[in-house]
Image (cartoon, rainbow, N blue to C red; front, side, top):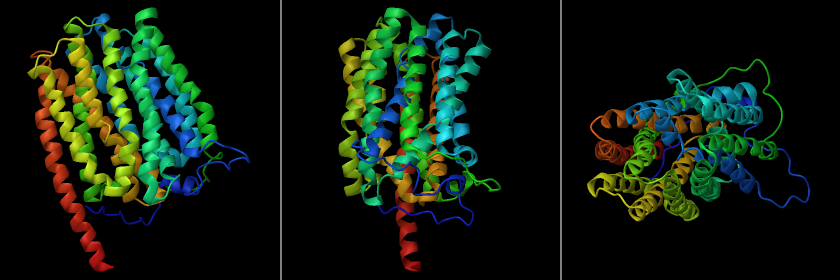
Length: 421
């Protein structure tokens, strides 16, 4: 499939006016040996692990303080709802404050909100704390993705995203195990504090890979509608939304399902660690294959794989640690192809000055999926803790059907563009 490229808008997006498109990093001092993409990858590692250490702890923590599985699904979904709504406007935020200030203040706010979440107990405070964490994290990922896209040519962008997502995936690998061990040894609160500390460790990395300064005054801004008007891009975001709806169900209800089988939070952490290990393994080869074959060819296999694996839990009534470790490993292997392919494809579909806006919309589609997944999963959990996993059938099928149609639409769009050229 050839990918259609969105036509440049008459009014450029906010980040284009906030900073020169090709200059998002301060000039490298003489003698610096560390490639820029590795530094950005380190930043992605700190941003990711700041939440990964909490993932195996949060559902069990909420259960301990009196919330049911259905209530937990609803509460957890608030974080992703907040992320999704704010990410739609990240282009405007970066356009107003600049890439570096947005990232720096987002990291500090994220650390503070993580500590507040550790002590929240009432429904209102838990919900607002989760939403606050979602808001702070929403402004972190799109600017980081845009910075990655700025580091490489279109022909090598898949490899650049492969490196970035590899180091980010190391956080997926180590974070759950670290969080599970810390919570088991010192209490749930310690995992939230650790997450805040990792967020602060990203501050010097952001300073190293972004340019200082604020945008010039008197500039108008654009919005998410500029990229969503393209039908192919819209379909891409819809597939991403459905995919992350499945992932949201898995990440929310798998720990609860395992706990009902008598397994500890430490085992949950190790299962997610194995999942993170296989997830990380495929990042670098996926980046190379995306440059060689095209990122679109790797998306549907990952979607189908995760839909099928999600059904294994209730169908085979998994209950042993070994069975969950195998399932987690397969789930990570299938999903590992997704982040590189989607972010590479997005960066190839839009001009450089719209990277942050497009990445914000793309991330929003995923985080809104993480909102919808736990929400509908919580409703299904009223039937039993096994029920949410069966939602993989309609969600996966819809993603495949829309994805196949999106490929055909992209081919037609490219053919029409070639005919007019």
